[in-house]
Image (cartoon, rainbow, N blue to C red):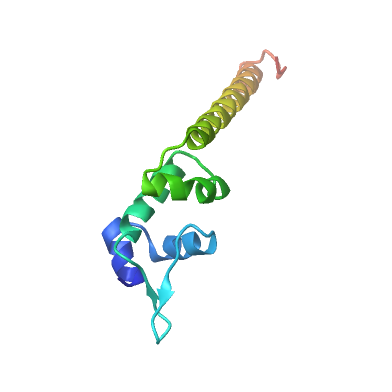
Amino acid sequence: MRIGELAAATGVSVRSLRYYEQQGLLAAERSPSGQRLYPESAVHRVRVIQQLYAAAVPSKSIREMLPHVVDGQATPELLDRLAAEGDRIDGRIGELESARARLGDVMVAVENSLTGRGCQAQ
C-alpha cells in the first residue's frame, strides 16, 4: 500500500509516517518510480507506534521495544523496559506537581499584591 493509503487506514498523517521512517520505526520499500510501498502489516505497526507515543514513550525507546511489541514476543526485558518507562513518567508527574505548586505560590503572591497586601512569594 502507498503512504496515502496507510495514512487513511491508520488515521495518521503522511508527515507522521515519514517521521516514523526517519526515526527507524517504520520501513518502506520503493516502487520503480520512488513511491513508498508498505506491507499490510504496517497498519498494525503504526497503531502500536501511536499507542506508545500516546503513552509518552520517546522514539528511541519505541525503536528498541517495537520489534517485541509488534510480534507479540513478550520478554522479561520488555516488561522491565515498559516498567522503567512507567517510572520515568511517574517522576515527570512529580516534577509537574511541584512546578504547579510553585506556580500556585506565585499566583497567591500576585493576588496579594492586587489586594494591597504586597507581592511576596511564599
